Structure formats: structure tokens, C-alpha cells
Length: 163
Image 1 (spheres, one colour):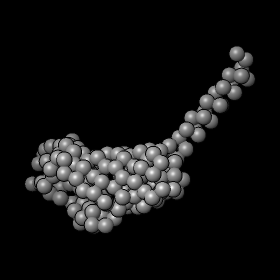
Image 2 (cartoon, helix red, strand yellow; image 1 turned 180 degrees about the vertical axis):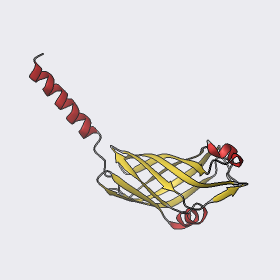
Image 3 (cartoon, helix red, strand yellow; image 1 turned 60 degrees about the vertical axis):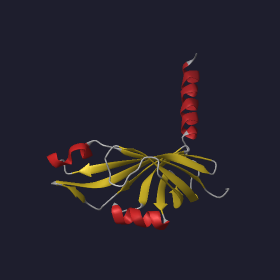
Image 4 (spheres, one colour; image 1 turned 30 degrees about the vertical axis):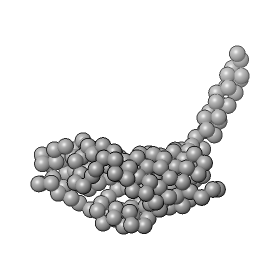
């Protein structure tokens, strides 16, 4: 293969890869259902398999930047408990990676911590599904124990009106 043909193949490959990662249109008013998974952090009141349904989720997007606003009673509860209900993140292809960084401090002995919830989701057409990973962010005191490395999981799915 000639050098110019090799360069052309590389350029075409890069363009195809870039187009494949273009952000999908994920914006909309979704209604989602959430199911509790493993409670690795031992959160009080968490029952594996419990679920909540009809949670309003407003997703706004500007190019590859995305915000997911948990609304309704669930959003209010998140604001009260962890100090936030707004995920900020990125869209790549039909995938969404975002984080809700809580601001309310909790204590366990001399351990102080907040909660960050990481969201990993995929949107296919008008359907969204993914996982939430709840992680304490601690002051690294010895009293933190399992909170230093634990993860508590939820799965979710839902839809938006047809686009």
C-alpha cells in the first residue's frame, strides 16, 4: 500500500470512529423506575429488591454535556437526604455518564461523609436504562470503616414520549 493510501485509511478510520461517538439526542421528560440492588454500604432502610416507579426525570442536553434533574417527591427526598437531585455529565454515542454530588454531610462516629451517586445509562430510541452507584466520600477517619470503599447499587429504566 502506498503512503498516501495508508494516510487515507487512517483518516477515514478516525472519521468513522468520531462519527460513531457523536452524542445521541437524549433530552426529554422521562418517567423512570428504580430498583434497589446490593447494599454494600449498609445504608439504613435499604431493602434489596424494593422499587419505586413513575419518577419524573428531566434530561437536558447541549452537545455532549447533559444534566439529569430528578423531580417530584423523589427529587425532593434526594435534596433533603444527600443535598442534591441534579446529575451533571457527558453523552457519548447513546451512553450517559453523570454524577450527582451530594452536599449534606453525615457522620458515623468521627467519620464525616457526603454521598456521590454515579449514573451510567444508555438511551435506545425513547428508552433509558442503567445503573446508579452510591459512594460515600469520606474524611478518611478510621471510624469510616467500610464507607471508604463500599458501593450501593440501583438499576433503573424508563421512557420518554415518542420523539
